[in-house]
Amino acid sequence: MDLKTTYMGIELKNPIIIGASNLVLDIEMAKKLEDAGAAAIVYKSLFEEQLHLEAAELEEELHEYDERNAEMTSLFPEVKHSGPRAHLIALKKLKDSVSIPVIASLNCLYDVSWVDYAKNIEQTGVDALELNFYSTISDVDKSSQQVEDARIEILKKVKAAVKIPVSVKLSPFYTNMMNVVYRMDKNGADSFVLFNRLFQPEIDTEEEELKVPYNLSHKGDNRLALRFAGLLSGNIDASICSNTGIMDGDDLITMLLAGADTVQVVSTVYKNGVIQVTRMLEELSTWMKKKGYDKIDDFRGKLAKKNVSDPHAYKRAQYVDYLMKSKEYLKKYPVN
Picture 1 (cartoon, rainbow, N blue to C red):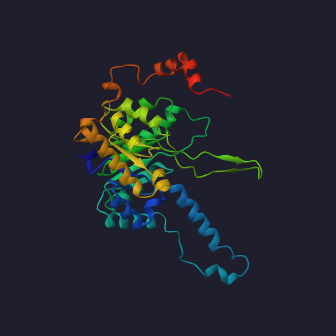
Picture 2 (tube, rainbow, N blue to C red):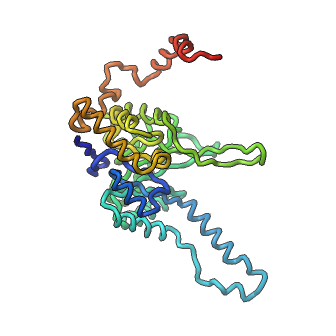
Picture 3 (cartoon, one colour):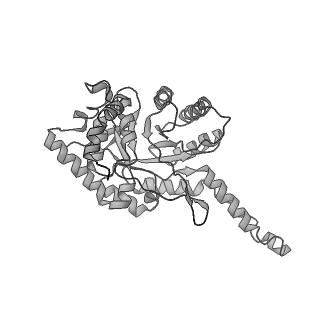
């Protein structure tokens, strides 16, 4: 089967991309993922906030004994935090170590930082850049329009500063996701990654404190991405990459049917090992052979909104239909 696809103008050998995570910090692991069939790798995000925190911690450690002995103040006179340099070196090392495309990921606090870091990242030779718009807005005085406009301005500035393709990784929590995507599409986004998995806090009732558990995705977590992939397919110029809850070959196939060009996987590799990438590709090939498809373009977007006969398939009608048939569902899933 011909599994090739095009993502942001980059030809990939298949639709499976390893999403940004600690998995690819180890070069040997990255090579194993490539051997297993991964078509591209997104390197772990460069978080400006993390760099600031690390720099502050280093500064505190260097001056921990300043008040105890006057001579201590000159022990480390030239030591400074490396900032993004270590990240850029590691990113370039990964790019030089694998033959598949490498995509950088970036999350910044300030407008000028987005542009400066994007330029530095481009110099490593990566194939593309993913703008990780990971944020939780807690300012009550900031309107949704202000939030969206700020994101679009960042996209425009980065696009003007670099020549490599630029994708946007979004959270699903915009008031009108479709409008945000359309506006970003018109302002040069080369791809949309649907969606960012935000870490949500829990409360430890024994210790009476907040904690943030590292929760992996589960089967079924991909439905929101599936819906928007189906809504957007054929209606925007940018590529579509589905993310979150894509655990096996069947999940991969559903995303392609909805209209996604690629998928990003992380949790399923943590849970099932590197071999899961190979299994997913084998499942895709087997399904294509069974259905009589020679290449992905034969069926990609077949069940996108613009191609299905039911105009309400992706709308509220599904919810209304569920309510009208609630007795049938209760019989199927009785409550004891």
